[in-house]
Length: 252
Image (cartoon, rainbow, N blue to C red):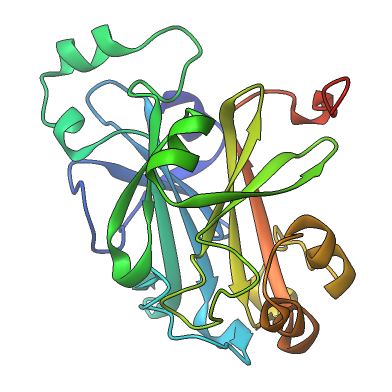
């Protein structure tokens, strides 16, 4: 946390939501990617993704149904800027209620997920636990294996098949990225358009229809149609230092 402040991050009024004990730090110049911290231990505890409301258009689904929260951010001129925000957390609500000494003792050096899981804001803002075990995600969380992409990993999508319905309560906003039997990252999907200039940053990819067909190789036709119009924006978040070293295992 101290390092983030030294790099220009500042404590920012956070969106309403779970684990109010955590504080939010954002770069002064933009609120696209902000970090949650445990203020007692200084450890990173989550990620807040923000999009200016006036920068999004042609959204296919209801934002709240897809896990997003309204977020009003004070600006330097005394007004507020309206954002949509979605969160992922690197510890559970139970974990943050432990004593600081217990939280510190649970941490291993250079390991940002002390409980071997991630907590995602899913349908209707329900917080879903996702294990870092690839087998457990497939067995217990309802995800299905999809395509492998070098330097990114094996993609898994929630309840995804050729018969999946393309609705706001069926297309889960997050997917997992796996390598070596572990979840080493997650991805976020948005069906709609973002004016990156107005948003003040561009951390989203814009895959083509053919790219989505390759990555989600067992998906429904309606998904591929949405990727073409209005389009899909994706973001990848990794919990390892060098995802570009990921290659297809020999013999696969």
